[in-house]
Image (cartoon, rainbow, N blue to C red):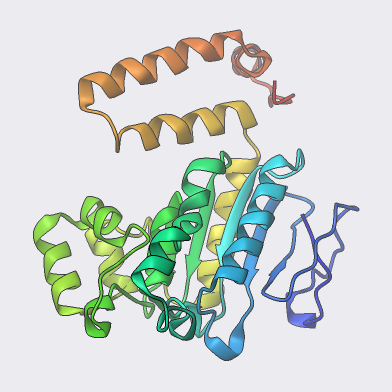
Length: 282
């Protein structure tokens, strides 16, 4: 999935093949046509990519379009070198009343990508990822970050708490004691600490290396059967909702179901014949 990109630094030196186009004022999407992985870049630089309702609506629309795009196998979500997303838009939140927040189910759609997007999403986190920005990264399937990234849930300093899953997903990632420490004090943590604590899958020395690493991993994933990668994502995510016994039973049912796919036959036949599989994604 590709959009018009005005910044030459974000344009590919080798243009990808024609793809559906999308334009927006908040983010830029670009594609590596040769590997079928699609990076989406949050693009609200003056606000350090602060998350707002319009931005999240457009981001959700972009992710849904990529999820339906038959040429996209994996998605990378990133921001700028200065900020992945520095938090939620305080100007939007500050005047809300309880009735307004409750009646509109404020920020509920921010978690849309966790339930609606079936293709794997990797967040490439550089600079600030605070509050809603940290929560957005935690919603993705993998976090890649630079060592100097700054992450955290500092909502307590504003007289509130995380509202887009931070208290739940951060606790799952680092454990109750450390999550309590971070959320109750508002302390931030570095990208290096995110790697050491298991929040991030990989840590890189520079922002460029982080984004390149995420794109490379997305390209690897995109080279496999779409059916298998989506099934793998599904069963791993189920581990967060089920006990081990129920999770293993769920995994086995999905495993059995893949024997009804063309790609399972193609993959095992190619392995036996020492050939590269030519996936049909069915």
